[in-house]
Image (tube, rainbow, N blue to C red):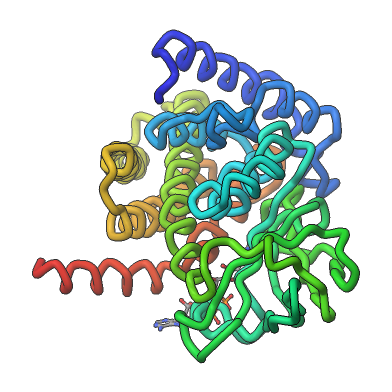
Length: 380
Ligand SMILES: Cc1cc2nc3c(=O)[nH]c(=O)nc-3n(C[C@H](O)[C@H](O)[C@H](O)COP(=O)(O)OP(=O)(O)OC[C@H]3O[C@@H](n4cnc5c(N)ncnc54)[C@H](O)[C@@H]3O)c2cc1C
């Protein structure tokens, strides 16, 4: 059920003000300190952001995908690390449970996820299984009423804050059909969390290794049937890719606004930069890229809300939006000139931040493979 339009517009208004007044002034601090202040996390909880996509009956806001991408767009207008605070709860960390969980599993976990008391992470990637994610080696061996879970997961967003992991592990044959999904509480014996990695951008959002050393995971914590884990993970990623594409559009819109403001104010050769046609070309290309990305995102979200599979659409939206925000960020540095390269205006930080979008939740090459596979399968 969508929220009534007035309530939804009030939410968007609140988010827009929160981003402009609370988050944007903190961008440089979070970039330097690699930590989002606890006070901001608390305010996000109070706004209900951790539960945007969690059904209302479990304490969330139950937004439709079309509504969720509008919120994601607004969060694109600031450092993407802020969105990551609640991003895994709204997306990859919770949606396996929403899509495939039993009533009992949902009742046990979703209210805490929706309120933000429970932070969730999605643990698919391993040291030897990245793009080839169906080759995961983390093993879950059945042993009475538990599975014994052993293995290492890599680059897991929010792992250092998580109290619940959705873990894809091998229970059977090689390949996708031998993978099952599990809800793994972080306080089970044998769960280890590595130190946050130092990264190129998105400081304030942490990724760590997660190790499982003979962890006894109750059979009751399996999501779906044995062998369904990979399919669940891919459905979760379809949705996640659309959300990420929306964030890319929001950042591109922010960068265009920054470019235009700077080009209007900065003068060379006796005129504002905005008067030079070569600058205008960069603005025009950025605007066109971003309008096209926005249209892809909104169209795909609508399709999903009408019950269609969006594997192709989500891959196309994520591919195009992440590549295009990369081009926009590059042009923004160019329009700002030296000021774009030094840290004061924050353009170089966003340039580094957006690079990740072409890598995680499936690289651009993987999106191309998915788009081609689906297009060929559908006969064009
Ligand atoms: C900051 C960050 C956060 C992340 N968060 C999470 C998370 O929360 N949970 C999680 O499970 N994972 C997470 N990841 C992992 C991420 O999804 C993987 O890094 C990504 O899927 C790519 O895998 P890889 O790094 O092993 O690269 P590889 O798979 O080794 O790829 C290296 C290069 O080879 C290319 N390539 C690989 N296979 C093919 C092919 N068949 N055809 C053409 N080119 C190919 C890739 O496109 C890429 O360019 C995160 C990663 C980062 C950096």
